[in-house]
Length: 101
Image (cartoon, rainbow, N blue to C red):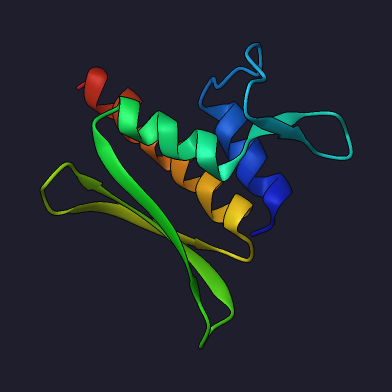
């Protein structure tokens, strides 16, 4: 997938980099949230969020759960940042889909 793809997916959800607190930049200048900011975004939306390294496959798995509840989603990436940013894009897509349903 790649970090650039994850960032594109995040921007496609309407995410804005107006508040760059807790963000870093790609080589092309686009900013994206760090894993710690992504964690804060998930917590603000009412989810527990974690990213862990899966050594067997040398990848990172980001997973989110309803607070005290069952798993709501998971994604994998080649880096912690990639998995976290892509997870946030999926959360935002899900929130947009449910708000229009």
